[in-house]
Image (cartoon, rainbow, N blue to C red):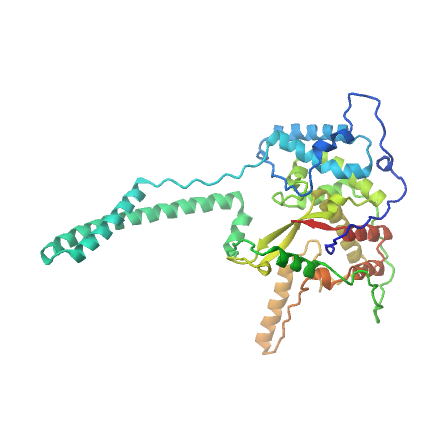
Length: 437
């Protein structure tokens, strides 16, 4: 993620026309065909508006998904036509979102009505009141009346205890049934909740403190200062296997989409991964656009805008430091850069630039947390058996945005012989990154 920039920065100019998307808008002779420019007022929304989630049908509704897939493709063809690449990138997600919203509607957040109390619960409430009333009468009664009141109190208590035991059994059965249904529906999420600490709270901070936190965390006053020469830096040899510079293929796009979680929150344009998973024809259209982006080195401004969300770290969180931030990005950009990241990792590993016996994070097919935990556990067990001393140091970058200069990342790309085209696209992306709240 790039640093927060207060002023806009012009993107790099794309390479000369390579595809029809880079040409000027072609006028259509047919008056019946819808022009893309005439529909911008319908499709575009102010960037400050947070879009509602779409009420998608269940997966079993196969016909609805297939019909909508065809409808979206027809709209994309009619509204985009032979428009410029920049225009396609700007409204591609809007076309999908508006079409789905018109058909399925927005998801309504229903407020839970308080559950009606059963006859047993109502009787328990009545018996509880009787017990309290009898206690007061016993304290105020004479010695002759006390024995009779105690007998009545014990009878009421016995009845209340019997009902309480029955209610407890009912609640346990109900909770057991809910747990079984939850486990069958989503076993991973169920197991995850068993080990998660409770988290709750609402961010309460004034505007001045919030802006100060943003400036301190994400701005970089030394951004424009050239990187000093690093002594002793050894440049790796030229790679034996070249970086794959071909445009993204459909197989790569499908692989990224299949790996992504369907429940991932959508970005600013409101299009989730679920749509890409259900609409194969729309995914083919997206792959063609991503191919043009790669060929023309034209990163969309829509991909550089993130929806900033604060998530609680602990229970009863209030302060800014008790929350962690995540950025929700548009799916199209995430797919594009996921393919690029996968190719970068593959190139570095195949050429032996990364020692996978030490580096576990970011390696495809390697569970980094489990691998590191296993290494530490083995070291601890060996130290115990051989009666040795071990020092375990946990290192983490506090505020990586300011800790790692962008010039350092560009230097690393040059060191490992990454093509200049990739360097340009990454530099454009980090330089133009924006976030909204």
